[in-house]
Length: 126
Image (cartoon, rainbow, N blue to C red; front, side, top):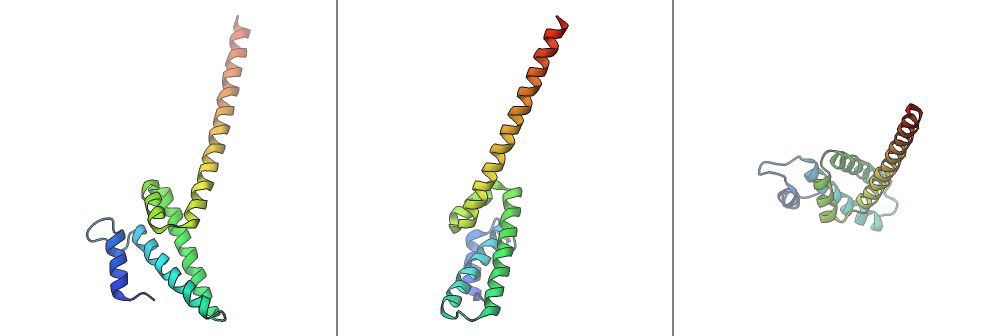
């Protein structure tokens, strides 16, 4: 668990506005620090399964918040991922880029088919 001073420093560093204590960015930053601390704890105490379960819950919660932030504000998501040096964010970015490339290819195919259909229609009209 984070002590008050460390938590306040994280909030001050990642807040969006002056009174911000609970934005997605702040929550993700706090969870990231808690995940780091739990990871270190589990390196020393390999048999601590309840802490391992808590770690997995925090990782899942952070993943959900990252997906939300990516959907809502991609610029803020990229900035946060850069500041926190998150590996999962890199994977999420790559997956999103692959999905967008696939959508663009499908769109191009549909446009091409429509153009061909129009050309055939125009030839039939002549």
